[in-house]
Length: 245
Image (cartoon, rainbow, N blue to C red; front, side):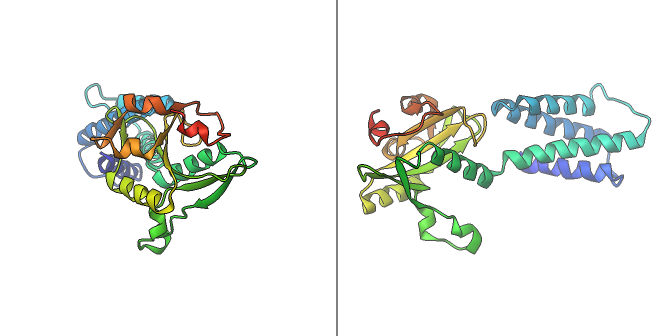
């Protein structure tokens, strides 16, 4: 679906430049289908202003009750606006690295500097060097409590919405984190943010790694996560807060 919607975005740009030579009825169908897909995605991720944009796009391009305009230039402007709307949404929605970085900053903000020290942080050198870097398979953060010296690691995952009623979990990565936990003799937690934005998620789940790795299914359902839910704005002040559930 992502490839399809990006393809339609490119075709709309071509049409806005007056270079499209295909059937415009087919283009209407294609743009309407892409608009419906993006409207559904916006609805699932609660981006209601984008939902309105895509509903308008579907209404304008729909082939069932077509809109006729005498001016070709007007259609070129409409094609350009639709292409920009589709492109901006797709870029922002699928910017995994950017969202991950923002969510990590959010998680770090929940551990105040007067209480916690960030002992380590993965740097994702694999992307820069274009080759595997062993440390990049470690959890995102290692925190140390200043007063007690207790250390633990946190892996951060943000999702715009629950996929198939839950959150996907990669068992292979989970085992890598478990090996890290055993090697360094420290607990590992998984911080899951869902909804609103990666900078300020609507819901936050702070789960022991074992709860994910012991699950029989590749999708951890929302019902299973609820017992690990906490106030998304509340800061951590002690190690005990994370193991009390």
